[in-house]
Length: 113
Figure 1 (cartoon, rainbow, N blue to C red):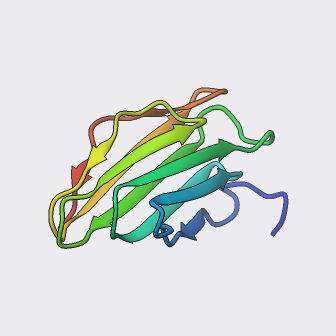
Figure 2 (tube, rainbow, N blue to C red):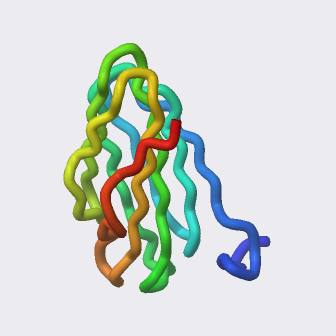
């Protein structure tokens, strides 16, 4: 359903595998995006790019699982957020809202397991 944004179409779900170099990238082009990073095996930087079609108020959820070490997820690009520090073998979620130029945090990251 190209060209139809949430809430009239399904939210976009992206599953990224962080590179061994500790880098991952995501272009957000829907008004509700859920990004799962899988298991972080190194400190990772997630670079977010907001597409030109993205509307103010778009929501982004980022989910990351630390491996046997508490991993840190740093955000770069079209996002303003402090690094998310993981807990050994636990998943954390952080949510953001788009203000027209950057994604801003809706609160603190939450451990969900």
